[in-house]
Length: 305
Ligand code: ADP
Ligand code: MG
Image 1: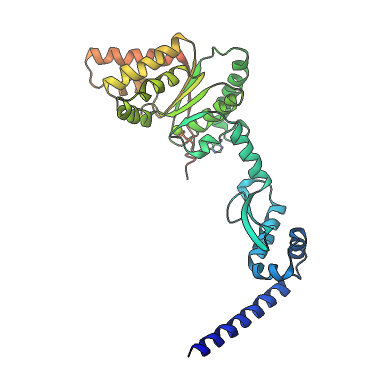
Image 2: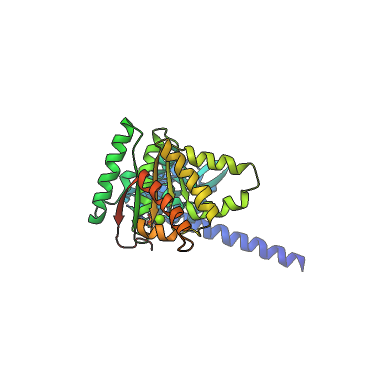
């Protein structure tokens, strides 16, 4: 019984070797495939075991040869080629960054912004990637460009209160500006405001709390993203937001906001009820925001897929 099993194994192995050889003979007729084998300096008896993976590499490299940007990448993992290294009589396949991906990674490394709960595309945002075809953005882009230039001469610049429709690119545009300024060694903080409040509430009792608030107060440039989407309490409005804004106002630190609400709507949002006490407190926050910023609106198509 055992003997038959062994024989079958030998037969199967023989069959497999043959099939591998056949596949390799076909593959090597392709000049690009041959080129790859030569570049790798891999012995034929080893390469033979990797024909289909090598063919995949050849296909990915040929995609790259025709490719003009990361957006049109056709490879399995965007921005990478599954490329082998010949080591210890084996081919070891790794995902190797293409030239566009390498540039993107280098750019990313230059961005020194600290982000709190922000998605990757916002972390990567840069001015040169801003799509300028949307006419509604032109005014905002001009504002950003001017800020970028004047800030380098004098840091005491008013920020922007950018409000408007959901998905119009408010967060992206401001992050692109601030990321550029972070490359010039300014301390930049971009914070998803509703989430910050949730986490501050939890960390209220520990040491981190004070450090966190200080960091937010003192950053050269601050973006409070999506203000107006939080649940307002007297504590987070007067103690947290009020304190941060007061400090930034007194020290003329550039501060930015994005919101789905106009300033007027934001004022109502800050009132928990219509008592005069609440009205005064809401008013006080709004005055600080107005003092810190200029206001622009961006109503545009929703870019979220
Ligand atoms: P908002 O803050 O106004 O709700 P976002 O800034 O989050 O909108 O933008 C919505 C989506 O569109 C995001 O995925 C963002 O990365 C993308 N986006 C916005 N503006 C641009 C741009 N100029 N170039 C490329 N992608 C953009
Ligand atoms: Mg946003």
